[in-house]
Image (cartoon, rainbow, N blue to C red; front, side, top):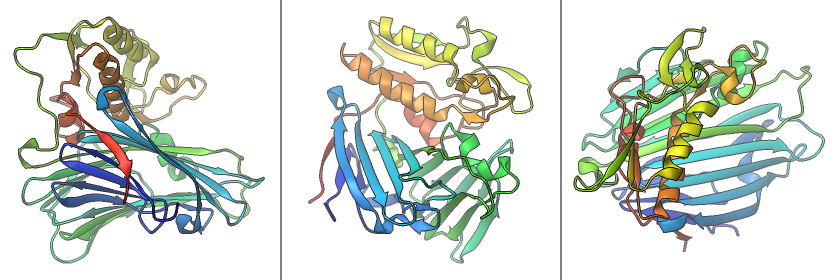
Amino acid sequence: MAGEGKIIAGPGFTGTVRPDGDRVFELTAGKRSLLRLGRVRCGGFAETGALVRKLRCHESLGSQSASIDMESIVPFGCEYRIERELEMASGIALWTVDVSAVSRGIVSAVELEPVVFPGPWAKLEYLVYGESEFRTASPGEEHTEFLRGRELIVSVRLTAPDGARVEFNAGGDLWRHRAAMRLPEVAGEYALAGSAGEIVLTRNVFAFPVEAVIEKRPWRFRNSFAWSLPGDVSAGPDSDAEAEETVLDYAAAELPESGRRIECGGRGTAFPCLTSAAARRIFRDFVRRAGSNVRVTGLVPGICGAAAHLERPGRKELEHLDLDDCIAFYLWGNRRLAEKGFQLRIAPASEGLFAGSVCAANLGRCPRVPVEEWREE
């Protein structure tokens, strides 16, 4: 299987997953590379020497999206299993990585894939956990370190001189990405650096000290990314103005308090958290009953601290982000509605941290098809 990759392609883009080499993934749109993912390191061992056990593709009904599953074994130390799942639609994608120890060992350290954004770039925006707005910078010709520290970089957005945009986000499991912040004795570091020609995000999630007693457990990390080109070439069109749309408005829905976002620190809000069982139930029931195209309004993606939304009510606070839940429900809803010949879109919020996000804008459009997969030549 060495060298033989898998490709997901759709209107204006290709996503390639490769079993070997320094890069596991590359996104190309508008005939240029927008995002590349390197390789994981587990317990100090690089994934570049891993043995690939599985690499396969799946298409959804109606070619709304496509996905790739990959499994590799790092044959060093106690041996580590790295499993990945990629699901892509037009303009958006979900990326999940599972890391576990195969034998009797433990996962003592994880460095997730370096995220490389090949330029040129005119504007950089990034969100640090705990801050209320994105920081902005204008990358120059000289290499610059924009941030280095233990705290999580939740989101990175870049805009090219021609208007092309790309965005990379931490997934809903913020508490895992912030493992080093939750455990004072554990080392961890996020860094964002580069120039107009290339920006790199590095993610050393955690490294336990040698003497630490560590629980034997697998680790799952979720991420999302989104992109758009000038004139929205890679994004799907809005629903036809003449088409009938049924509206699910969360602002008017009978949502119990258990389904609302709670800011970290305990302050309640009026916004729904799509990670919660109550908010998810409303979405599913509405889509299943729908007899037309669906538009969802009133969702404002953001960070929530309610541990009960993650079915861990015993924990006082467990930080999570429901942006990737919005993506997952967008993909699920369009798969379900495709069976009836309909589509779904989630109107982008005009407020909140992600009001200007590439991902939110793309969720506001019905998906363009077909999105297909094939083997790399």
